[in-house]
Amino acid sequence: MNGNVLLTSVGRRSYLVRYFQAALRGRGRVVASNMIADTAGMHAADIALTTPPAYSDEYVPAILEICRRHDVRLLCSLHDLDVLVLSRHRPAIEALGTVAMLPTPEWGLLALDKLACTRALQDQGVPVPWTTGNRDAARDALRQGRVRFPLVVKARAGFGSLGLAVCHDEQELDRAWRAADEQVARSVVGRFVDMAEGERVLVQQHLPGREFCVGICNDLQGRYRAHFVCEVHEMRAGESDRATSVDRALVGGLPQRISTITRHPGLWGLDCLDDEGVLRVIDLNPRFSGDYPFHHLAGADVPRALLDWVDGRQPDAACFEARAGVRGYKDLVPTAVPAGR
Image (tube, rainbow, N blue to C red):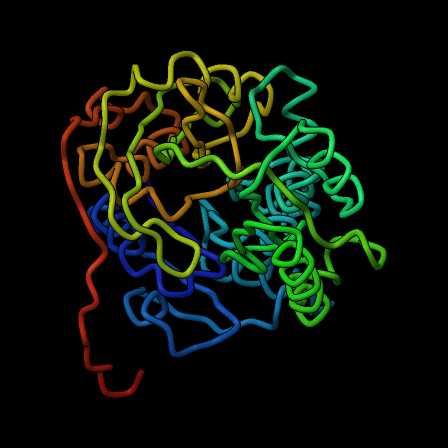
């Protein structure tokens, strides 16, 4: 592909910057944008541009100007709030000749609103945990024996494990609910999702089984192409921190089902928990999610596939191969900032 790639809300994802730099093979540059200039992803990029926050009226015009000025052929958003905002302006982005790896506005909002997303998937027959956004409904379900402790409390619309707590009795449930509600009220999420007081928290049945992250890769027309699976061993700041790639057959036909429902372009991440042999979906990320590096370490190369699709070529089949049994972790590497950055 001749042209540049824009990674918006790049944050600390320097690894993704490098994956795209390798896939470009000198035919273009990686442009990174972020509201904070001093981040790992910004320092790794070929061009780093500071933008207003995603909730600012100046944000979308700034992204459109970056696409115009820097010959951006492919845009990938790396943050849920950013995804939602840009998905609402996808036609304007694509009118500039930029391919935008963004969901529809409906899915951008659904993926951010975990309660609405759980209900939407359940309506499509996708297994999900028992979930409610009403504290009294959770108490009633406990008394009727439809759910049991422990329960999970978390922000209805959030990221980075906002408000997350595991509760073992009703006192813990009440404390966790109040704490999560206060955290959501102080966050910027309310600027993106309309939630009345008392509707900002959800409760789910806690599932103690193994956790799997599934990367679902569609082509740019939203047709299923491949999927990758890793088992998560440890989380840090709401993202997979240690994981092992596993046999993709373990998740059965779930990725194809999700692909058919969402028809998304590019890569989405799916988080699942094993409930006595049934994989239940707990989160849907409409972007490169934090587990993608473990798929990449196992041999997948979605950045390269995306660049080929943008150029109208069929990617090499090797882009969609991932070996099982590859263990990985995210390293903390102290790095000096180059002079002048």
